Amino acid sequence: MPELPEVETTRKGISPYVVGSCIKDIIIRERRLRWLIPTNLERLLKNQRIEKITRRAKYLLFKTKKGFLIIHLGMSGSLRVIKNNEPHIKHDHVDFIFESGYLLRFHDPRKFGSILWTNQDPMTHRLIAHLGPEPLSNEFNTDYLYTESRKRSLSIKSFIMNNSIVVGIGNIYANETLFLSGINPKLKANKISKLRYRKLIKSIKIILSKAIDKGGTTLRDFVNGNGMPGYFSNELKIYNRAGESCIECKRKIKMIRQNQRSTFYCAFCQT
Image 1 (spheres, one colour):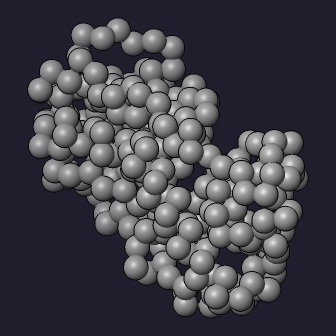
Image 2 (cartoon, rainbow, N blue to C red):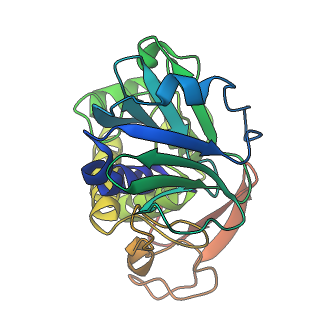
């Protein structure tokens, strides 16, 4: 957390306040995030206008004439647009102050987020270049996923959570899409038929699109650009419901651990 729907929700929320605006000043209270914030970031960004904000996987890319600001929210980060006179609180590590009177505040209690800079094409950056296709793109289709799966004997849940295969399918959304598609999370990726992959692709696109429409999922820390939680948590059908009745067959939902992550599934509905 946050995953792709939460990052896309953030991008949409902050863009109207940030795109086209000029950065007047930057306040950095803590540089020690996952990677050290560049020491020259203030000089690079001051008086720069944000031309657009795009997203690649869970990275937000802020384009300026000089280059790109790259922000990752990590496990507990958020970006909020607030008025310039709002006092900061604990874990408010960075403020980007705009001439409009608004500021963009980066908050991250666990400090696993990152704020980086590149003057090159961000698609060639070492953190981005190796990533798989976007799950809502045409590139992510049945033929692609089925072909990639033939070489993989890992579980289907681990397979679709691999960012070199496809980006943005975190633990919550992996659980939900496998339930919707009726696929047992323990099945090996190379043992699943092309027909079932077609259904899985459709389920992934449905779940992620719904999550974006609902503003993402808030279980603990996530808030959007306006400080509001995501409401897809109200739509969860299987995640975090161990011991409860399946909404389809009324049997008990099971929970196992896969790669140190909790997996929830219905042994009757998911085969």
